[in-house]
Length: 106
Image 1 (tube, rainbow, N blue to C red):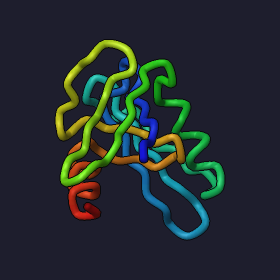
Image 2: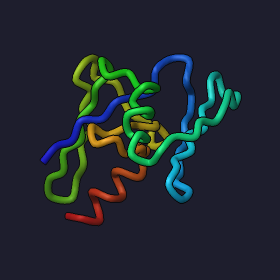
Image 3: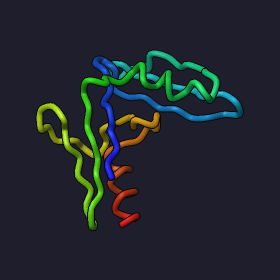
Image 4: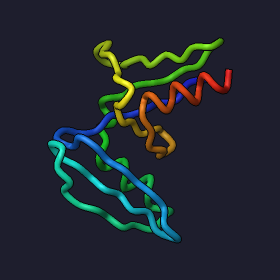
């Protein structure tokens, strides 16, 4: 099993989203400063989130017995636990959260 993940576009340094009622709220930071918040219909949330991620900077995660591996499809870079990623399904997460999830499921 593997899932594709994408990293943030430069100069975006952080992003957070939450659902309140029928709307999703996206907060965006560039160079560590909050630059704004967007309110979008829940159904549009994954599509709008993808605007902030680089689909050319692709990673994938695969789970095996008690391990999770993150592989850079491009350069073999290391992913820190706080690295924010967006899955191919539009789910926002961090490397640390993914590792915990995979490790608890095996």
